[in-house]
Amino acid sequence: SPSTRLWLIAGIVCLLTGCPTSSEWDRQWEQMQITLSHGQLQEAKELLHGMLPSVREKGPTDERYALVIFQLGEVSRLAGQESQAEAYYWEALPLFAQSLGPEHLRMADSLATLASLYHHKGQPDMAAPLLKRALAIREKSWGLSDPRLLPTLQTYHTLLLTTDPQEEAIEVASRSEQIHKNASLPFRAATSK
Image 1: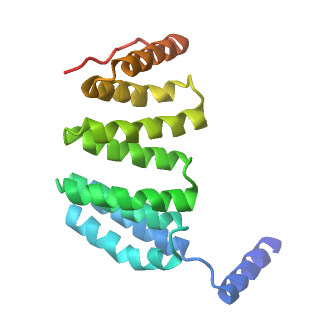
Image 2 (image 1 turned 45 degrees about the vertical axis):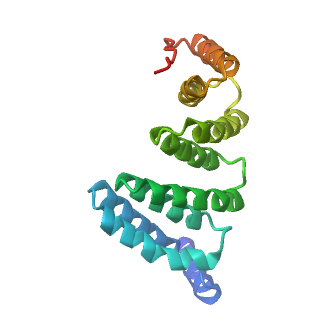
């Protein structure tokens, strides 16, 4: 059949040109996710370290390299190793920027995760600029009044209240309220601690 011939040709081309091992990558990534979902942090870390050589070989333009490093940060955070998580998150940021671009939403997610780590460590002065950058990327992707911005805006507002730039905090709270009104959602203003 024509379909069988097409698959056969694709297989031959793959053998001759050296197809990417995305299926092996996918299998390893899925195994690591399952291991992690069962709370087996050390095993997940070992699987990630096992994946590193192949993605490192492809270089910083391969998104998978950034994903492995970022996930090592997540595993470290879950294990209570905040300093190690912080180092991995910082290492992942330029890798995401090189592989996906500095304005990609995954970059915003990474910045927000790092900001959250600093927020929980009681370092709002470190967290606020990271979250502000994540917010800017999300605004560029989603628009200035998208309801998906609300969690980021509210967290940023809370951070601003603790770092004391009241004028900017009031502006962010006002934006949040306006987005809530436009989206017909109940408004919950953040309060300082």
